[in-house]
Length: 462
Figure 1 (tube, rainbow, N blue to C red):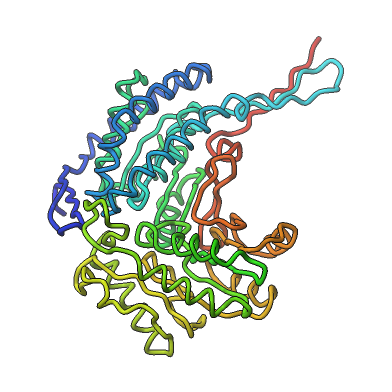
Figure 2 (figure 1 turned 180 degrees about the vertical axis):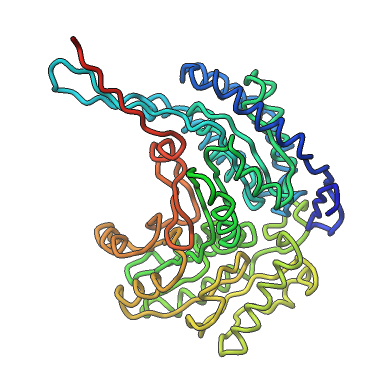
């Protein structure tokens, strides 16, 4: 294998970043330093941890424009949209710092004379985070900041597509005075990533990526009893009920399906619409999709950039072609998007009707700017179809009836239920998947439970 990792920008398929892979000696030294630094950090008061990490966030955000541009250059998101990731990064980081004191506080067991009893949240040790490219800061911050706030050390392995993001973290933490060794990053091959997961120093692995990647992480951890946080694939559905606000549903679901070229963990990938609204919804959805501008993501007027790599775009093209072959009707003419070129990452958006669940575009993760829309006659039919998936990350309901949304939500096999919104992570709520969308949780107080272990104190007074 080559001694360097090369990042190919989808803007023009040139090599944008090149970094050497870590050597075995460097990996060993990194893990040793992390384990040693964590011993002192775990007894550092939470308030002191919060002070240092808040300073690091301030330093990081003082360069937010540069970070946003690097997102675009590394993975192709339009420059007009990349700054939004900085806002989301700040929201999650500051919220998890803010709630740490309460989330990590001792849980007292009272009302037993002569005894002091409580449960203490103890850090795990060294947390290894394997982060993806599609939202390189938003996905990684879910683990990095709370892991450190909980008293752990962190070793970050970022995607080969977005290595500069790990370096940006490092610079901010170093400048803020985070003790040496507590946060480190490594450039690793797949084989070395598995070795790090298996290393005795690593007590927890947080992985965001494909289902196949999740299985590889589980395999690497088989020899140890460690926790795993796995956020994997998705085929997130939306249901537009007969009482939905049609204009609002169209506007938000087009964005939910097409933003970031559909390369979102919780992008809308299939839509079910009540028959009373179906025709108008489809017409409005297609019309709005046609208004997107596909092109160079460095152009501020572009709102649909290239997919991350040509192979990803070709996969989606294949899904579309297969669906059309089996009876689906495409509503978008790719020729109306001048930048669309087969054999490149530049892919026009597509809207398909006359689809069903026998088609890959309705059952397999697309992770691209394509959506299939089906007509349904009832809530029961919509629920059955929404649950007819091996994935379960989010589901979005579009209705004016909150009580009915809650009833439907109780019947859906998914980690998050939205009403009249989609494609958003609220840091106050646990981010969790079911079925092939993964296991474990990040964010909220529940996220801190994943990054600590309970230790019970049973003290008898004599």
